[in-house]
Length: 338
Ligand code: NAD
Ligand code: UFG
Image (cartoon, rainbow, N blue to C red; front, side):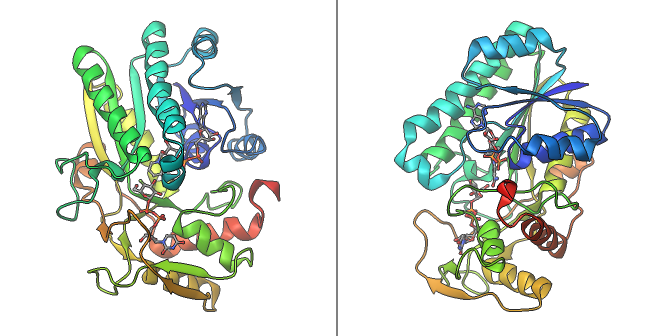
């Protein structure tokens, strides 16, 4: 099947293009390169052994979307395009609601016009806010988001639920990601944040490669085993396999489908640092700092529903995730600019 991959040049989208190809589908990418580098296209082509069709366009551009749907026989859409930096979203709420909410509504309208009725949406565990209990299952309360990025994901989920309700022949799947890390085992594609990384793993690998002096650990007084924040880190390869499983198992089933994509294991910041120290064979420089505003103590998934209904389960270990992140960083010290 031809699958339109919006944001297909980004971190997760690029891995999805490879996973789709290997599952026998044809990815067709639409990306405006606002947070990616055109050289990723050649890397995907190298891994897939075949040319990749790419439209350099914006999901907010209706004419561009209509052109893609007119030129390509699209069977389903995986929608990754959007802005994702929590801190930036506080400073630029309009840009976040415009890209993430307006962009998605625009995409939906173009799909309806083209009679393409299968959508897989990149949502986030952030829609659960500060969860009352962990592990978090799909029935846990959503909303209570603390920043415009999280609110934009929550708003899109609500819009898609209403749309699915009104269009009973559509299949819409919301995938709530926990914390994606890692890279393709080849080291040819991976996460390449611009500027100072917001997230833990790219910060750790940039310290390891010598681009940054030390890792700041944001808080060691949380009510967790070692006092540092606990998250459910999932290998990006497992994450994109979850998308292929959702497409294949739910794409032909009408309705709104919701799945957590996580491992079910909580890992603390200190455990992550220790895992990287083990892979490196040396200790990373770290310093304890105050808590980061808006952070929660613990967040990890109950991934049972995805296993039962999609036959999908995360396979990679924490060591694999760390090794693959480090392999990507070492092979590309300056990301795609290397
Ligand atoms: P990314 O920034 O690496 O990739 C997003 C891609 O979309 C980029 O290539 C960017 O150029 C493109 N893009 C952005 N706005 C666009 C627009 N208006 N039109 C066309 N292209 C546009 O991010 P990612 O980590 O790959 O995340 C992909 C999706 O998954 C996002 O929707 C993100 O919110 C969601 N998500 C990510 C995480 C995470 O930790 N990485 C966690 C939960 C959810
Ligand atoms: N952390 C540090 N130092 C750093 C960076 C992070 O100690 O330099 C800590 C954080 O305090 C937190 C943990 O590492 O305890 C993970 O932080 P990340 O920023 O990597 O991830 P978050 O869980 O805060 O947020 C991520 C995405 C959000 C998404 C959320 C849930 O950035 O967009 O996962 O999916 F909403």
